[in-house]
Image 1 (cartoon, one colour):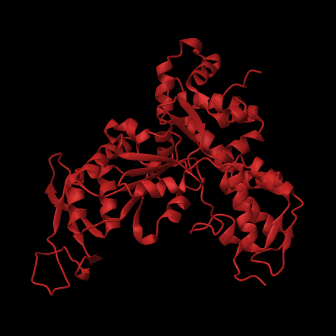
Image 2: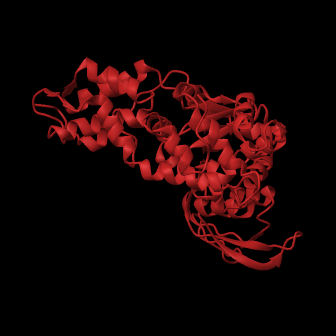
Image 3: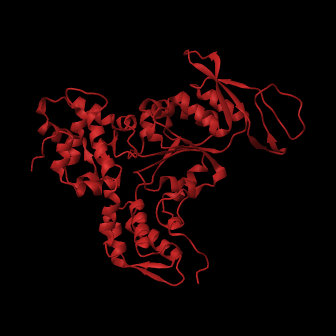
Length: 432
């Protein structure tokens, strides 16, 4: 009999907490922990569903941090307000205006804090200081310029806030907000002890430093994307031990290879293989999992369920921000849909993208390269505006590299008739 019974859903697959078969990766988990103790801001980046959030949850306890879920409509003012709300403030718009004409924020704290040497204190920043008992404090109501990071720093210092602040899905923020916040981060680093953990779907290690070079030396980037086959095998083996099941060596090698080394697809394939043979929890005796469909077919099934989303992505992305004569965003998809999948895995270089587009675009070589560059640099912003979640494409402006950050899209596109996809968005068939 097993010592402890676990549900399959708590081991394999996506769940709200990190899975029980989580495995640490050398150079990733330890790098995060090491740099959090050095008061550096941290960026955890990588493709979609590659374990970025699990990494953060594994290395920190729930009491160590607050989480701000970034949204596509947020400007810097709204992002700062969201940070204060997660810290425990109640936010209202003030009648007072800041220098740029926008309304200031009225901030009132009504949460509980642990005050050193005093004990737990109930704080209410809604009124003037009054005489309190020795274990209670109240603070004045704050009026803040939400555009000014120094005001946010002062408000957090007022309540002795000391937790990490996690900015989840930072890539969904508008381009301008990401850029504005990169400047705010320097102020947070220099004028406070507050540390931010930025979690984003992109493939560019130094994107925030590209926005603001002053962040050099103040920020560390951790690439959560890389999963070696041996590490994915450890994920499967850990799940086998927890559930008292066994997959064949063939199944394990195929599921790792066919997943394009995406940990989500490996987890989900193992989950479905277990359920297909009636395994829903830890087995009393060792159970051999034999799914007649095979690993490749299971993964194809998982990915095909996203077919509607991927087709919608192609259509919506191709339309761009608005109708234009050059239709550049539609043409950005041309090299993506006409090249070999292995080239997509490696990423498409700018020169290759430009030459491929110019070879088929009505303007040919007369097409201004600047139009291509501008469109590539706007890829994230367009996907955010179009509410495409998760992102499918990312452009690394440092290395001039276009990458697919949704591994499922790679698998899906490898099984599609490319001419049909090109025709779907009104592009000519690719040349052989």
